[in-house]
Figure 1 (cartoon, rainbow, N blue to C red):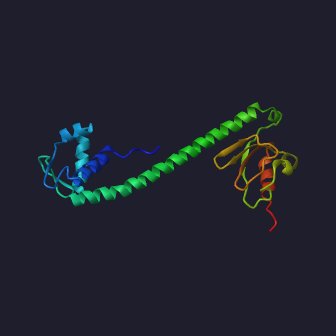
Figure 2: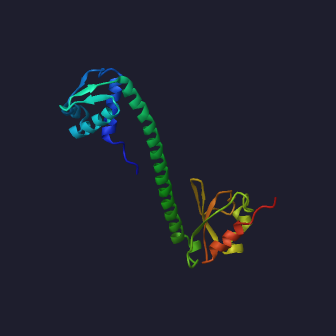
Figure 3: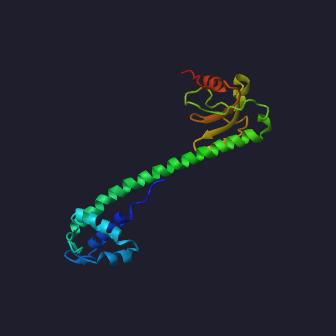
Length: 208
């Protein structure tokens, strides 16, 4: 899972926005760390880190006595704009990681469903050994547009189709009228050589 933006960075951004809005005008002293820590309900150390970032960006000056003085609203604006890009990139990464997590969860659910099908389906109880495999159907495969009934896959390869994954949709125990589409992923069970037999069958392409 993606981590949240560090608190000190969020505080630095907020203070920079307050400077832009003239809540802290140029030349003004910003409240002491303890008071700011109280305002934001965080530790003085987090405030110190936030001020260090703003100091490095020439937004504020920090004296030896820990006094903080606003130097530039323009620099505060640049600081916020720069971090907008960082936050945007960070958000995209978060979204990507969430999609990956969702895909992994879908895969886990898919495997669970297939296992349950094999455990409880009377049709599959006599198949030994169970050997579920997932095979992708290419766009130019001759089976695209054909129904399971017309293909008669079991007669040709000895494989039984237990599920079809079509994008995010999962079709459990598809009926004989189910028509296969390009990029479908079919899950079949059968003998140990079922993968080779079905793959060879599905790899046949349509004549141009």
